[in-house]
Image (cartoon, rainbow, N blue to C red):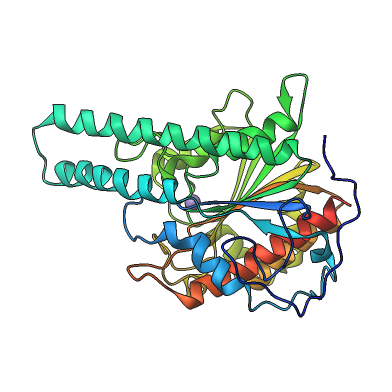
Length: 356
Ligand SMILES: [Mn+2]
């Protein structure tokens, strides 16, 4: 059924290709690669800044600059990383339904009394989001079925719902998922619908924790922008542990090391870990164009240390997503793409290392 056990093809890392497919300049086909990335250029419910649908493209463009040999993970890349073609169809639909979603937000902002119109448009947007989630679910299942390791590149943070569903189903026993989510984000993303949109980027973890086969645990890190309803929600759930950014910073300001705090974070996770990484979990200096930047946050080194610790602890990374890397109002943002590509590269490398 799959060729997952075949020896990965060695290649000369000084050779790069430039094509519509692939990533990091790795000149291999999807069949030859152990890890497959699904780009999801979708940003229908983004509320503030825009450009997240350009994430896969700007990351891919910046990815060719990365030196493949990595200090922490050495030649992990030799397993092969492949990014699928960025779907024109998804991009077109994202644009179309984003316009409708914007119309809903406009009508609500101006306190329009045309509730029938608001309701109709909201339903159309919700149906489109469901369709996207089903597409991501099917794509993810097909990649897993081929024996590949999986990563998703958004897009806004609503995009991985179908992927997380597929991964939770893949790793389950006795109708319980064995997967814990390591969620790095500035936002809790636990709103029960946002602006009327059931599958908003601000609701992803609410939706994830309400899947029929939900993750065993959700561990949030860097959270610093949330409403009271979200605060109460995460506090009320024994299967959610939130490391608020202020709590982390207070510990650090009193002299506690990141190694100590990171150890606490990792200890909350089960053996199988899925990483959901919203780039805005980082300090906004690393992601100036992201849609909803918030002061504070993690440094790149702290995130790399956390990934390393997941691996050192003997846990397995069973999949990941990287989302909200954005070009902002422009078509390009070299710096956002550059940081995104480096984060993505570490995610790919540690996924390979922890699955050996
Ligand atoms: Mn998020």
